[in-house]
Structures are given as structure tokens and as C-alpha cells.
Length: 302
Image (cartoon, rainbow, N blue to C red):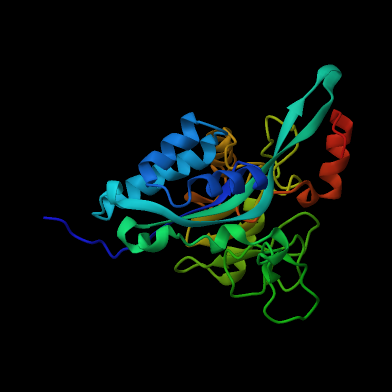
């Protein structure tokens, strides 16, 4: 007994590590093909292959099976590609010098539908692929929370009552915590029986402890590198919003261990939590002036 599936499955990856042109070519190659054979074509040929998009099809097949759909009945019906922010890494050179490596990424979406929905005249929806880059919606830029707050402007990131919202360093309007260059906005939730001003003092103590945590690759503290985007105190837990140069950076565990050691001596802080934030991506522009001076002294060109 056969059955007709009337489902549509969307699989998205906001930062697939592939150049925009390569991703578009790969999707044009497989749109209209059964998803299983499309994946094999991208991985083994004939013609040009594209392993990153093939891995995205792997995920789409697993999601289809998890939703109770038979991948053998699905085709790649449509897709879209938009350029995303580059991934930035560090490459050390001889004589103590270093530079940045940029890897292009794309926001890629793949749409799977039952093959029977596209059998008429052999046509397939390709609206997301036929658009030229100029006709595509613009890549989202910095949101208001990422822009510097004007003095007294309501609704800016870091304003009192917006715990954990990342913003720009030194945004005014922080209750009880003096603005400091290179320090992200802070917020706090007082612990039971702890006055609000005491909680804000603990936020300042957490930031001071984080300024002693050194990135082992770059040799500069994580505050000046712009890795710490927000700090809040929730009861007796320090909630830290952080990023690194790349989501693929292997130092997340090292950072957590160093932060744990740095916060251990603080009174009133019994625990901590790191909320890793990869979008928007970290940029060299996030480094403070002091951090730039330190990097130049080490040998970075910045």
C-alpha cells in the first residue's frame, strides 16, 4: 500500500563553512533530485562535489527519519544561500608574528518535499536559487543591541532591567557599576536577602576576575579581546555571555576551567554559567584599544 506524504521539511545552517558561489552551485546541482542520491552526488560526484552541503543533507535525512518521513520518498525541492560572516582564526608565524585567517561561511537552507508533489511536468521550485545575490534579502547586520547606546536613550542594550542582553562596551545607564572601557554591560538579579547594590558590586568583582583570564593562544585577557559580551549575577550564580574567535575553537573547555579558578575566591559567588553566543560572530573590531596594544606588542598585525 502506498501513501502520499504532504509534509515539507526545512533544514537550516546559519554559518555553513563554504563559499557562497560553491554553495549555490551545489544546490543547483541537486534541486529536483531524490535526497539520498543528491547527497551521494555531492559527496562522490560525478562533477563538482561539495562536502559541507552533503553534510547538511545528512542532517536533513536524519531529521526526516525523526519526523516519521521516509527519505526515499523525498526530493530536494528548493534551497537558498546567503553570505554570512567569515570565521576568523589565528595563525602563528615565525619569529613571534601572527595574523588572522578568514574562512567564508553562508546561511544555507534546504527544503525537502515528497516527490509526488513535484511530478507535474517535471518542474521543481527553485525560487531560492535563481535569485541573483542583488535580489536576495540583505544579510542581517548588527542589531540595535549591538550598537553603542546614546546617553539617556531608552531601550538600549545594557539599560537597567535587561539582564544578559549583550551590548557595546561601556554603555551608560548601568545601575551601581561604573562604565569602563572594554567592559560589556552588566545586570544583576539580587540573591534573597542581598541588597541590590551588593549584587552589583559582585558583578564588578566577576568582571575584575575575568580580566585576569588569559587566552592561551593570543596572550591577552578575555575582556580586552571582546570575548565577554555580558555579565549578570542571578542569585549566587554568575551568568557570563561569551564568544570566541570561532565556534570551532577548541579552547571552550580551557576557558571554562580558567574562569572557574578565577571566580572561586569571590565571596557571594557559589556557581557560574557560561552562555556561549556565536551570532553575531566575533570580529577583531571587538578588541579594546588596550587589547590592540598588547597584541601589537606580541607581534600581531592589527
